[in-house]
Length: 152
Image (cartoon, rainbow, N blue to C red; front, side, top):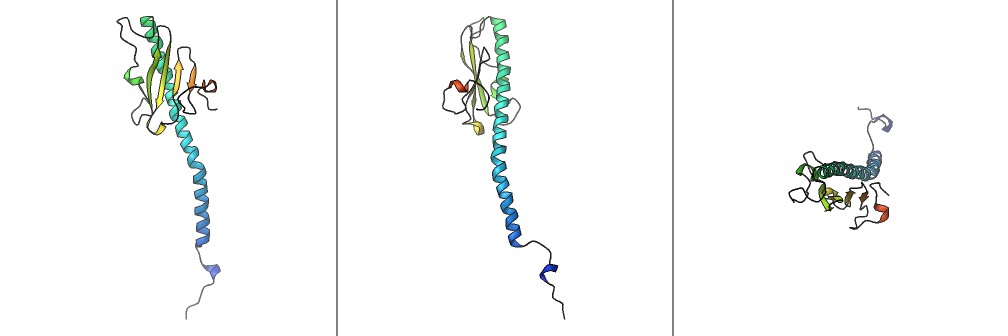
């Protein structure tokens, strides 16, 4: 005759224990995923800020060569070179379009407009006096509090 084992001799997890572990993992995931997504969005924005700074350097070189920001000596309007027209600069999905938003003989404004997964994050701007702005509430205009690249 076979000897019956008691419950204390059995090994493994009960369904309740397994459900508790699944619930804990779900709670941790619900907390971690939005934070991860925010970090990715912030990293993409930071990359666009770096490309804007490179574009500003291009504009300063353009001014040095032409003695003005809006057009070259032949009368051709200024435009960013293709390697500075999108962010990130490396291959892969692009998240910002960069362009000269406005330019005069002595001033310019560069703008990075979000697209793809970054759409809705608000545009970034940089002027010839290195005034930085971020439309953090994505309403299409800049309030005084948005005249920074910092999060509010």
